[in-house]
Length: 78
Image (cartoon, rainbow, N blue to C red; front, side, top):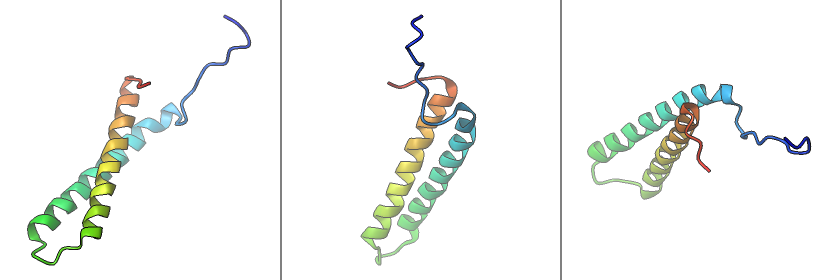
C-alpha cells in the first residue's frame, strides 16, 4: 500500500453511532406521535406553521436516526 494514501474516516466517530441512533429515533417517534395526536385532537384551529415545524422535526430525526442505524449495522452508504 502506498504510504501517501490516507484512509478515509467518517465525520462521526463509530463509538457515537449507538447513542445517536437511539436518541434520534426516540425523538422522531415522540415528535411523530405528537404530530398525530395534534392532528386528531386539534379541532379546527390549526396552525400550518406549527404543524410544518413539527413534521419537519419528526422527518429529520427519523431520517438521521435511520442513517445512523444503518451506519451502526455496517451498511455504508456512498
